[in-house]
Image (cartoon, rainbow, N blue to C red; front, side, top):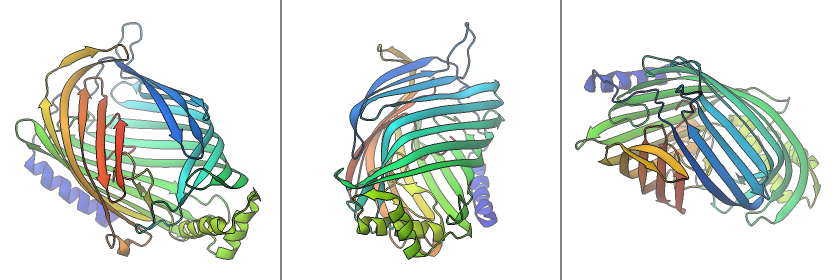
Length: 416
């Protein structure tokens, strides 16, 4: 850990000297009001289909007083009923202490469990874990200083869910289960934002460090912690465009291994099944549990942030590393107000983006980069004065392509 931090701070000092005397281009606590309302149709294998609605309000005013408070709500109907409520940048002490809080619940949900955690795994070789009665709550408190150039934060999440079934990749039932899970996780960290703008940086450097603890839940579980490092440098090019370079590393350190007896773990998985039990699937899940109990579990690759052409959580392991480059070609930096009934804001930038990423995962750090996967693509970004960054990406890689619509730049972490 000390060697990695020393390395990161050395890079920080070198880049800082090349972009010395950085000044913020804009106000770092924007109070311009903006909103959006979007339909969210969904089809989730193993869980169902339906329709949702997203509403977001940035910098909500109270009695004519401007604030940094952002409010979001998602209502979901159909096979997956539920809702999410989220409040961010609550000014406990304006411009110093900020609080984020959120909660949600779902009648049903699902996630993919790949039979092999390694990078040479078959993209179609996975099962779908179906959840019911899922609830979560989280809170984050941030101390921000020096015009938001330095943050210290703590984050806590509580989750409750029940594993109700295991299905194949087509959603067909493999076996039914009834296993409840409940857990609390905490993470802490800091962020150094030595850039000319927190929302839309064009030059400088951003370093985010987080550490999260995963104590043993029972006598069979491993006791480990995870450290994440996220370093992004921004190099100005042309008149007001940017090349962003990112490096990410996640490492799990096991203090005490969990139970690694495969026969015992198979028997334990079998005990959770009460209908249509499939021995082969149970063995695969037990092997994955054995790997986690031995090495722990760090970050993952795939989804909206890293290796964008792959599905979320496609690759995971005790050690994860990725690097990427993105050219953000600013076509306009003029302020333009827009109000289209379902969305209202002030556009401060419009960009085309071209990106390339590569990443690797392994259970042993020495095996990183023995195999890797890549993604490349193109996208657009609309930057607004309220703090939204509307991002549309088209990415392609060894397993096909994906389209991403989200409201932030890539390569984010809890420190963003």
